[in-house]
Length: 259
Image (tube, rainbow, N blue to C red; front, side, top):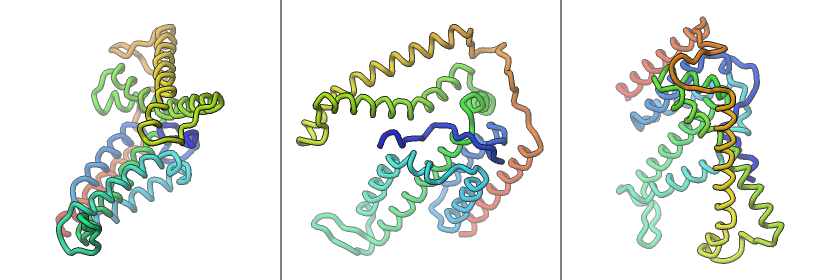
């Protein structure tokens, strides 16, 4: 169900990861993704999987919630991984007409799925453990973005679960009026979705307008001169996190060079 889409929502719990400065978490996530994309290396992937498992354990975010919130993305990366199994030349394992599954293709498909899975889970963990305000402040500081741009990116990310919930309510309202989105060929189903897409866009634009009015009424400005109620200040735990980040980078480079 679309109500299970929780990607982009903050999971409120007191944990070690929640208390870390958002600048540290943003930089850690970016470096982690870069390391994932550097090389197709089994020891490296095992090490980065262990790193993710450690961060997730410290975050106290339920794995069931993370998987449920990103299951739509899982289906997409699974399809992409399967397609990779047919695009590599090598030792033939199965031949299905003009399609051939090779050993090398299966290995590549496995690495693609593994890589994308870790990428999505680590990115979602950042948003589960960081409030919208702190995420905006962190992006503004460590990415040198203007306040308005950082706030816009954060709002766009937070709107994802809201839009999915709105889509589910509109579909239920249309089905209560007799609409059936499961019957007919794909073309007919796409035509039926017009009764859902148009109200969804209308509600999204209306929500954006109300949000803009609310921010204007509170005299929000994202430019220079805007003060912070809770300014970002590094603490000892943030320094420890930076040391762990440096250790992760060094270990990953050693694994890439050695293997």
